[in-house]
Length: 378
Image (tube, rainbow, N blue to C red; front, side, top):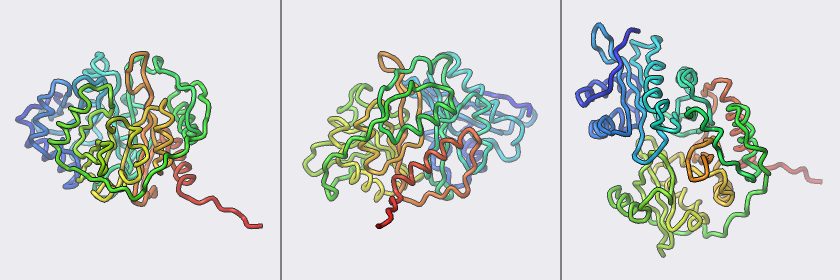
């Protein structure tokens, strides 16, 4: 299709909302395509870039996509990729994706860009793959659209970045299959880390009462007071809107809760994540009661103790993001762990061959976590 690519402006917002409705219907969970105030903020954000594609002949809005960044971060998210049903099969998705990456990634403004794509069809996976994105894993039950859907995680790195990763000498044994899948799919080496048994779970009171504070403005202010710089936490493009704390106030867990998409993310804890490690079960249970059928956490591959704590509470590693964060001596890898309280149904999932090793890895990890080991009685 002969299209005119241009940066989105405030004058485009009404048409953009119509475009996202035409593509996703009334169940699109992101403010990017539904909330005019948030859309205007992203359009004006100097750390982000929103591009549109219009028919040269008619001026009709045919497609849209965004790379969403944030101040001080070197990572961005490709999101809001939408092509009107009347203009599909014309290459618009690939054209917009490549234009965004050329402007934000290839120029050195960002170190990497990631995308979560739907698995109801192979089309979205092929679009990002054709534009240099490579698969990092699978996120089962990650979002609720018209029903629970699993997402695939992809990322594109700047040239040479993966060669600057800091090696990790030891990992919990349950993560070894995921590391092997990543090596096969990405062609990177993790230098054969030693597989160690996960550390035993910390003692905890499963019935401990947690107070959940849902006051986004207050939570953000308190979070900024607790973490005045970025060194104490890392969760790109997520701002906490929920705070969980026990009656004695000995720790505070900061989380993001999306009621529309019915998912949550554990961002960090004060005074440090270890303080709340023994209470992951009641924390997850509280978010589940609040409507999060999927809870996610992002943990450095080098943090054996933190990984062990999440694995002990039924979280499963579904994706591995290499060279996700620059920190002094090089780039560090992160593991995406998740737990879903709703039935995971893979019968309708469609994945490209490059994602199959991750899917098989997740299925095996889920079975070893949740299915009992059968013993034959003598």
